[in-house]
Image (cartoon, rainbow, N blue to C red; front, side, top):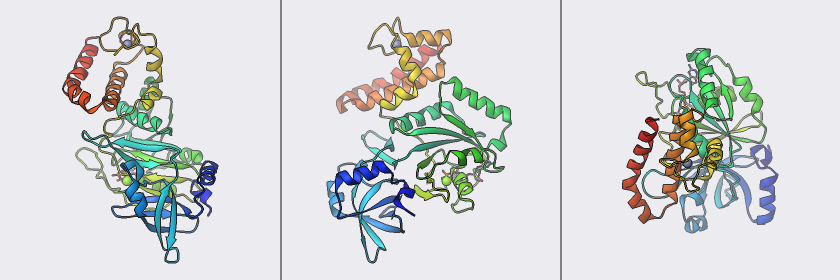
Amino acid sequence: MELRDLGFDCWFQEQREKLQRTEYRVARVTAVNRDNYLVRNERSEVLAELAGNLVFSAESSMDFPCVGDWAFVRYHNYDTFATIHDLFPRRSVLRRKTPGKRIDYQMIASNIDVAFIVQACDFDFNVRRLERYLVMVNEGRIEPVLLLTKSDLVSSEDVEQWISEVRQSNIACTVIALSNRTGFGLDRIRSILERGKTYCLLGSSGVGKTTLLNRLVGRDLFETNTVREKDGKGRHTTARRQLISLDQGAIVIDTPGMRELGTIGVSSGIDESFFEIRELSKKCRFTNCTHTTEIGCALLKAVETGELSGGRYRSFLKLLSESEYHDMSYAEKRKKDRKFGRFIKSAMKHNKKK
Ligand SMILES: Nc1nc2c(ncn2[C@@H]2O[C@H](COP(=O)(O)OP(=O)(O)OP(=O)(O)O)[C@@H](O)[C@H]2O)c(=O)[nH]1
Ligand SMILES: [Mg+2]
Ligand SMILES: [Zn+2]
């Protein structure tokens, strides 16, 4: 195995030459535990700890290693243990805002090429949630692919219906329906996996992320669990994020099911995920249009004529207000906090009247 097989491509090679940290070796962070890390290089995977300088210079959670990071490390005890001294710049990141008022991010993974957003056909399909994931993925400059699992539990008409709902929402990403049980669709997934590229599995608990990974590995390497009978929800079986190399050369990161995505806190991903709304809004009469009550608002008009679906419009407004909220100062936030609920409510009500 070479570093290239772990995803160390020319971009990282260039960074390495630029940074000139020749006193260190290079390894990829494959798991983050409570007190330590796992790092892998072309030879082996070993436990690692943070070097003091990294701990002391860290200013936020973003400065700590996350799964997928490339790191400058030193090996000890005949290469059985490592210390992490610095991180490579990240080419892409998946992160979400931590719940609560404090503005901090929880890192999900880094240096991902493709994010598989996984939803189960039988209990989990939801376009609005998909849009939230897309904002996060687009903001991280990562290519999204939607996987609809458990196609064996619904009719093929249902699957068609879900896919057309996605298309009606102007979501252009690749959609693959599959069944881990029958194997339907797995060939299509295998055919898009490329050697040396990193893929990340995202989605609610119980949708079959780990089962899919086991199918790709070819044996039951990782623990999976049945979903609860009463609501079909998962049991949060996967407890930590980890990076796995497949025999055919692709790299996959499995993640624990997310309870919620949290507020988005970013606006750049929204523009990409709602590009048709962004285009439309250029036609609003006022450049600072809030798209809620203004005369001459192109969005409100489009909802009225049915050109834009009410659901997608509400979803856009909601994500937009979350991101604006994030960009405000603390004082502004406290003031807006009280108004915020009312704002959303009235925007929704306004739209319902249409
Ligand atoms: N019928 C059917 N069941 C599936 C399919 N994929 C997964 N399952 C079942 O769904 C349950 C949950 O699968 P997991 O792979 O543990 O789900 P997960 O997304 O990894 O869940 P967390 O680790 O909790 O986030 C298991 O009982 C799987 O056997 C599928 O395509 N069809
Ligand atoms: Mg799992
Ligand atoms: Zn407008």
